[in-house]
Image (cartoon, rainbow, N blue to C red):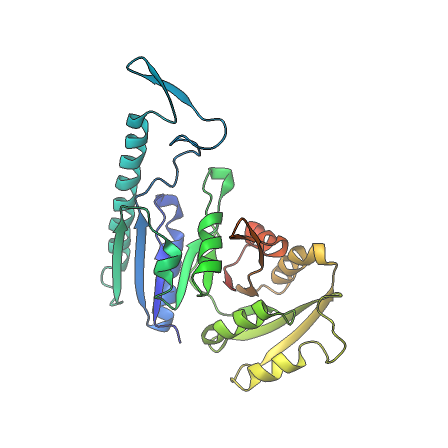
Length: 288
């Protein structure tokens, strides 16, 4: 069941479509919605405080110092806080009169969205838009690998609200895929059509069962009828095959396991996961 949802409120008004999408999710499940806006230094360049490569140098009272000048950092922080407060005001206006159970939170000190997300059933965040200088990759990775909860990543081109007409569930028999499909059961039970999509290669065939039969039977016992579709592809082409299938069948959502690997005690997205999240055109429900 989905009873409460946490949303990362975007500071830029042009990205408010993620807010509108989250409102429709809350309405679909009659869930509580918490909007969180961060007024921190997320967009202060690396090295601003004196560590990292290519550190800027400035002079204060005749003494050389490293990092951005304190007044520049203060200006950036002030701009962030103003933008975060504006995002909350827009959130309040959007939910006014909706009869939804809502709350908002302005976070003015460094804090972890993923830690907050542990107290909710579902997180909703927006895809990065690197062309316009918005990078949410770290936020997405943290929410996926550290919250213990599923995440819906919303495309920055998203225009409509939650659409459950046709959901494509990516299945490769792995732990992450099983977790994602189980976490997505509330959505799958409301969907008009559910497709179990299998990319056939050496990783998805173990020879012990016909691909998709057992998980299909499992979903049927939950009242979910699935169509199994299998297409061959090399491991390096998995993301492209998934996205092509989604386009061909006019799917409205992808459900997939989130894969990654450890680097310096932190998880980073694996190739197929990153490929889908970089070029996706529909929301992706993802779980680890």
